[in-house]
Length: 148
Image 1 (cartoon, rainbow, N blue to C red):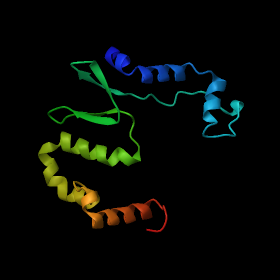
Image 2: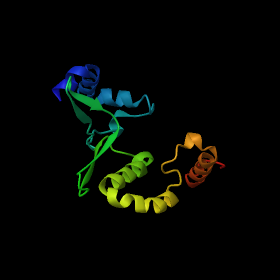
Image 3: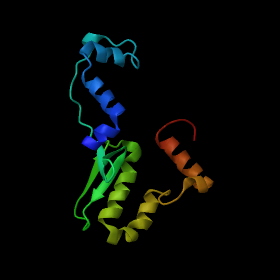
Image 4: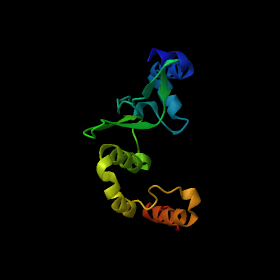
C-alpha cells in the first residue's frame, strides 16, 4: 500500500483533501451538479465503502488498478469480486467471468444456453454489424430509450 501511496501521490492528495472538506464545502461541491442544493437539506452519511485493487509489483511494491477483478480458488469452490462495486452495465460480464473461472469443467456445456441468453457472448460486435444492430435494438427497446 505504501508503494501505491508513493506512485499515486496526486490521487492520495485528492482523497485526503476530500476527507478534510467541511460540511459547507461538501455542499458547495455538490452545487456543481445540483445548483439549488441547500446546506440544511443535506447530511453526511456513510453509504458504503469503496475498495481499490492493489496488485503486487516487483518494482514499485504495489500498483493501483481501476475497475473490477474476479478472483477464484483454483478448485472453483469460491470466487470474489474486488474493486469498484459494479453497476448493471458490468454485472452480467462479471457473472459470466465467475461462471467460467469457478465452473471451468462445465462452462463449455453451458455455452449454448448462455449464448441464447447473451447472443453477443464471445463475439466482437465491431466485427458483426448485424448482431450489433440486433443487440442495440433489443437493448434500446428493453430500456425504453426511444425508437429502436
